[in-house]
Image 1 (cartoon, rainbow, N blue to C red):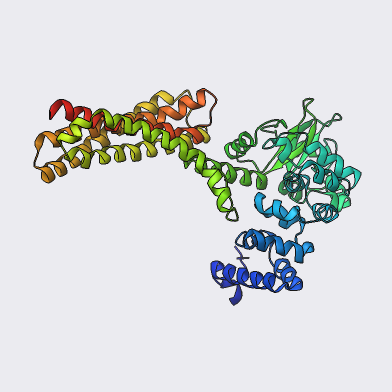
Image 2: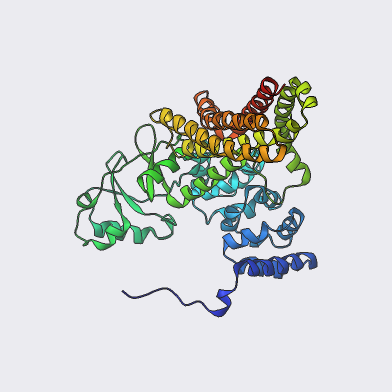
Length: 462
């Protein structure tokens, strides 16, 4: 088999990180010098995705200055690749006519992405600058809620009646030219009412003879997605059925658009990022955010954590007499709580990821809860032995060693149980497990850990 991999030129083999640093430095210098020509040249020479990455490493003021110096460099493709917060900073400096010109080169889904952060007045001004046909498509896009299929889908697609041949379809696409979607993988076969009957992959179309009927090539559509479906659900369907594209149909079953794999990759990355940030108790924040923006994003969850810490401290206060009598308890009790917190976080992370990927359902929840609880028990026994030996050597007290060993077992069992049960309970009540679970699990492990250790110490040692 022939190897078609291109040979890299020496300059293409440069480390990408070093190259980015060099480009960022050049762009920052050009902005500082007010060199509009060089700013545009640097951005134009980069792929839009690379240009977006470079801009995201600048300060907000530098990005805004770049937009003022070289507004023409901010093409539709570049705007669609930028993070929403940086794109918002740029679009508020561009004239409506410039934004309208930029989005003309984009598919409807990417154009909607650029426009959705604008306020209503600015969006209306931009829409007034585009053609009536494009305006109608974009306004239809904004009739749907954010993060739904209707907002994400492309309204340009390729469809053909079942009586067409391969030659008819190819000739039609050649005549359509620039009116075709930039990226598409299937030709949808529709009936007279524009209801999809099946699909022919473009790869199969190109391998078939011109006289072959499309009806003889079309495969069954695995799924048809409604516009009001959440984008996360659509991404799950793409992942489950290994799809490259899927038709979007209205209430009457008529074909109104399509989703493609490139859109779904972005959704999957976005949802994973949201889950990761939610577990840490922070909102989405860009590198260009100010200190105040970061504080506003994180302070509310820190306040919640403060309240749970006070609750745990209240448990400690109950046993202040025991702590005053045996100083070693104060030395050892953070170990029990810390081990429980780490074990709970492990179980919680597994649970949240399994819920998001639909691997954890009502059908197998009981088995997974038992598994995580037993895992906590086994880990508890293991580390009870380890910590018991450490405590006995450290404090020369067998009873104290037994207390911390038993408390370790109890807390790790509850850590495993709460790590899996809390997100399941929250999901049952309609809350997002990724957002709320960590606070509850940490509270459980702290309270149970302190109560078990100090309570057992008060009973056995005093």
